[in-house]
Length: 135
Image 1 (cartoon, helix red, strand yellow):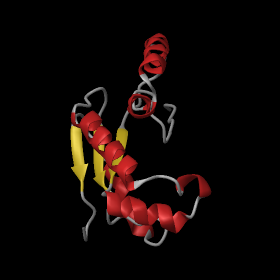
Image 2 (tube, rainbow, N blue to C red):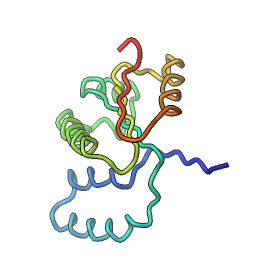
Image 3 (cartoon, one colour):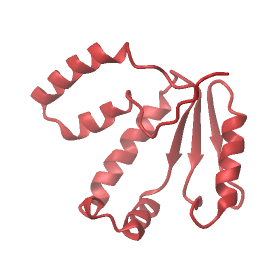
């Protein structure tokens, strides 16, 4: 048996938020700490990038109604989306599954989750793209 670890966080991806939110002096400190910690962080067997358009993200934020998400602006989401795209376009540390998440609805369509699980089970080296049926 091998240990399986699932997480919705990726240490290297943390840099995206650092570069979007920290000033230069904070970023310098962050980068020093990042380099010290990075070598001890285990690499995942697979990274999944759920990619969705800004309109989809805004609708989902509104539907969830979380207070801490209400202040997220469309401009910030656009910057974040572009940063993610840039990051994952160059990502090659582990296998990567890029999922078009615009039409996925895990809450109301259980089959979407099952389809994604199947893609995860069949993941291979390199970058793969998954567009759910009906998208």
